Length: 264
Ligand SMILES: [Zn+2]
Ligand SMILES: [Zn+2]
Image (cartoon, rainbow, N blue to C red):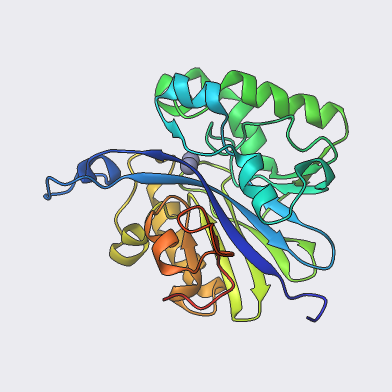
């Protein structure tokens, strides 16, 4: 394996049953369930594992009425990653389902866009509609990490390690960033919430929770441009990810899949 080629895993930790109409601005004509899954992602290469997002814990799942299926740490350990040894965490954005479990990675430095921190601590949080997906304790925990010297800020596009770059997308949250990873099958793009489901990316429709609609639809084009093919873009909350990609190893079906493997 050359120095800049990585393995990539999606680790599912939670689920939320909801109707399709709840997933799109202007709703959806089909009266069917279209659940969301909750994931964190692990990028494994020569410079050690990089974790994208930290999920939520059991207490937050209960508070938000989201089902915690398996704790984030268990999923990482299942593919041989010790959270206590992780040195790099990339935070796609600061919504409650992406920055919880904040004591799980005691050695890690957190990589965040400047404008996400400004957004989550500034005047927009005066508005109930905009602060809805944020938790004060999560934001405070990240501010403490800033003061502990454990946050690295990025402004737009930046390299984390050779073969792994972050890209500011915005849209769903002001400082949302996606991650591009060089793998054996080309460049895989971990969209996180830049596209919740494959359907958003494929149909150009928009998830209701949105800071800026223009940036969402422009973001879809950016994701496709960054990836080796549209098939290389991995949405942030789609249960289909677990069906399209093979289990990381036998016994992990429906839990941890390998995103650097060819999809089925
Ligand atoms: Zn989000
Ligand atoms: Zn999310």
